[in-house]
Length: 316
Image (cartoon, rainbow, N blue to C red; front, side, top):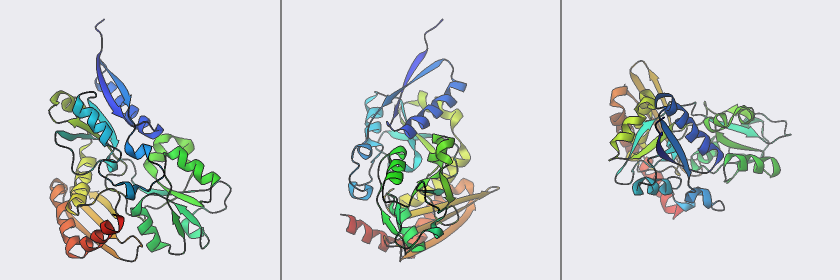
């Protein structure tokens, strides 16, 4: 029997990252049974530095750079990321070759074990909510000004342990991440914030990054590419790119598709949640990138750029 061709895949080291990478490999094994996919684990800066808030580290490739270096050196052939972690401006020579079908992109609440509360509205004044996302904090401060918000870092297992053993009443997480980790993790969700919060650009989808010149791998990934998800996320990423925003500024989106019409909603907030700019656009889903650009330009005219400039200055 002929020896299987080997393809090396770059992944972060967390449980969630490895689950996501194995999921992609399982999908590829269905259509490429003759190939052996081998995972190479890589720690990123965002994985190593856990005692500093994400916004103070910076957001240029915080969870991707080391994996991208592996692709550019030829050590690995593709890297699996949470799409929300991939900067809109990629290093020269790299492309997002495939985007997987999106899971529910909503943020959710996980309450501390033993507390009688289920929802954010149940929490008493001064209760501590854990999240490392400025996007979540700004929106929640706007909606729940009586609560306190504190940074919480680490992989999902670490954050859940900090929740149950620390001062937090609850933490805010992405629903997709908990569901990917399995039923025991998903069972901890006490409230969905889908009606309240705009989610992160690309949240719920996986992006697979490849060296642009590696046409063979790009072709190999085509069967797991989900075009509907990709168009929605391209609109969102175009919007984010127009605002020159990264994953650590308070920018959120909501995307809906009815037939061939795409609706893209965007929000930009000040860090304290007191200033909010919202807008939406509708148009053909085939015009996704342009719709994102138009939404970004419109929100700049409505004052979004002024808010973001002040935030960038305050984070220096």
